[in-house]
Each structure stands twice: as structure tokens, then as C-alpha cells.
Image (tube, rainbow, N blue to C red; front, side, top):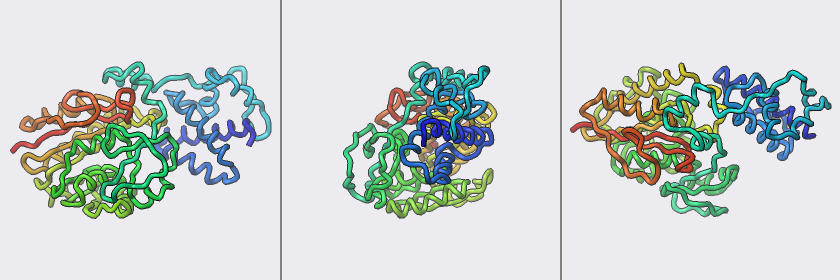
Length: 390
């Protein structure tokens, strides 16, 4: 492909990403993968260049751009050479019109910048939210020490090893054998807050595809009962194959009815030693990996997910035995989904208390801890641990 054709391909990708963001459709990663799958003639160098340009444009535009063309034109201020590729050549983008304006650079929509600043995220701390994330793996203690083809770097998480972005770990024998899992160090650290121990009954209330579930199974050494729940059938269906590969034999997956979760959990009322609520959230802590998520968020959506978080916390409280542990996690840096949410839970449950788990990273924030990309070199997370009354 010519450089001009690569630019045009990136514009087409961005048009699809923008449409999906407006309609709450597929993620940018999936859209790009589907785009390449339909164009198998594109070589690896072409695919890499198109992906890089598309993600540069996504990171550049805090507000959702008018179009993919506008998003790429916005990059010309920092990459003047791009303008010469808008030459109207075959398979390339049309000439730049005299009145065309590229998307303005910004970290995020203006209302969200205000929310972040009010939550103590500004300046370099805010800029770090859009830096490219490395790739972290977790060594699966259920499968023994793996033989890895590349040496990585340790992180604060005790079972983690870090590699550069794009390292093809999923092609390694150790991954196929279930000896390693791809999991950000911050996510691994939040699992430590659960304190899951062999022989306990632990519930992962929002398990999704099971990344944290598998870490909990390893911490429990496959002894005890681990119930992984979710309302999303598609995501939960991916857990069982992952658990089999990882040798996590104690995992029980349970599909819940949206808004009717308590009916499917009646047999577990008052039974759990620990409940993890890895709640649906804005995802502001994951922009390094999903920068287009900024375009999907609105104040209305934030209000919706915080209401879900409150409801799930109250549900989780009914599942714990006296003295049991409730761990609340969001991949968000907004206080509305962190410190404020923890405070309102304690206000509703005055006989509960916040406890302080020993974590290898993070800073105190309200009744919990917060992990930040700039300070901890992880994705952004809030985590709090509450203890049920005796």
C-alpha cells in the first residue's frame, strides 16, 4: 500500500470507530481486527501503520470527532508531513479543503476533565491516562513455573512480569498450557485485597470473562468454593474454557438475571467468606488500552453505572457471613466510582467498617486505595475492603 492509501484506510477505520462510539457498538480493537480480516491483502507493515495512525488520532481527540477524516487532519499540527498525503491520488484521501478544520487536541470531553480534576487527576497524572500501556502477565501458580522465551521485568504484583506492548505472549507454549495469563499488574493487586485463602467460600459477583476469578482460584490453591457470576452470557461463556486451560477446578460459573441477581443467589445468603464486586464502571482507568472509551462516556452514563455499583454493593453485603470481607473494585479514577461510593456504602451500613489491606502499590483515597498510571505504572483502579459486623 502507498502511504496515501494507509492514511485513507485509517480514516475508514476511524469512521467505523466513531460510529460505534456514538451507538455504543463494538470496541476499536474489534473494529480494527474485523477491518483487517476483510482485507487480507494488507501486509503486516500496512496493518501496523494503519493501526498506529488510527490510535494516534483517537488519543489526540478528547471530544468525539466529526469524522475519521477530521480526526486524522487533527494530527497535522504535530505531524506536518501528513498534509502532503492528502493529495487526491488513487486510493488516497482527497485534497484538504480551504475551510477544513481538524479535530482539536484534548485529553477528554470538557465535562470529564472537570470530574477528573475534582478527583485529584490533573496535569501529568491526567496525561498518563493516555500513554501506551505495557503488557503484563500473571504466573499461574496452579501450573508451576513456566519456561518463558523472553525475560521480562517484575512489577509490584508478586506474580507479575512486564513486557513491551505487543509482545506476542498468546503464541507462547506457556500461555497455551495455562501457565500464564495476560492481566495488568493493577488488576492483580486488586485481587490481593480479597485475601482469598484455601478452603474459603468466595464469590466473584461481576466475573465477566474471569480474569480476576482465575487469580482468586490460584490464591485459593484450588481448595474451597469459588462462584463466578455475571449477567452477560457471552462474557461468562468465555470463563469455563479459560478455567480449564488454567487448571482452576474450583470455579463454578453462574449466570444471573439483570436486576434479579438476588433470586439466583439465595442459596449463598450469609455464606461467603469474601465477595469481590468488580463493578461496571466508566473505565477511566483503562484509557491507555481503550482510548475511545472517552467518547462513549456521558454524565448520564456515569449516573447509571454508579447506581448499579450501589445496588451491587448492597447485594454483596447480604452474601457475607459475619466478619466476612467485601471488596469493591472499579477500573475508574473518578471519586464518584471510588471514594464517594465507598463513603455512601458505609453511610448506608453503619455497622460495617472499612479495613486496610496490605497492598504493594497505591495511595489512600477516602476509605480505600487508588492505583494510578502516573504513580504506580498500572491501569487506574479504586479498591476498598469492608468487613461485615459480627
